Image: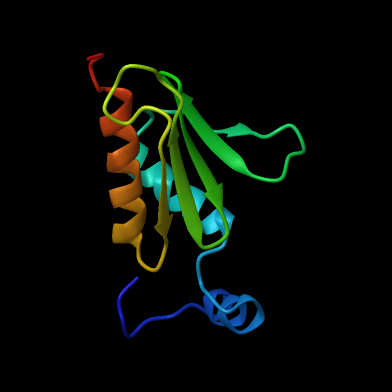
Length: 107
């Protein structure tokens, strides 16, 4: 989204929630970036989307993405990384982090 353009839906979300980036909008942007490499799943309560790969998770919430590594013996073992989403570049950065920790070699 360019700086000068804002959709009416985004404008109302910004007024109602205080930010533009609802979880569905983040998911849509991620789908463009992922190009079919990963697939979304729902949590057990159908409240949020997540991606799972090699004992790592990418959770999508309103206004942020959390990346978590549950692997042992890697640099990112048992760490959480939070990304506040303000632009589509923030989404790309979070996804790149997710991909990088899924590919870490064991120490």
